[in-house]
Length: 58
Image 1 (cartoon, one colour):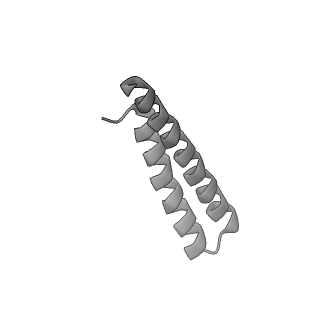
Image 2 (tube, one colour):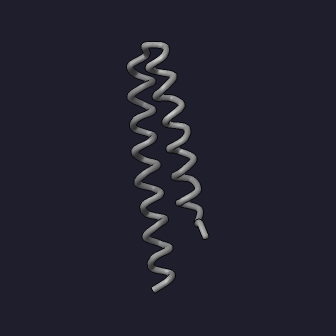
């Protein structure tokens, strides 16, 4: 079962990946950096959701 943080985190990771790739393709360093940052933030949010789920199970 996934919680809201896990779902949103995955969404941010996907959006960040798209931005990162688009930035690389268009040679837009700012967009690429924004994508990397959003992807990292999504990973943190997903991990927080994973921890929430682990706490609920214990």
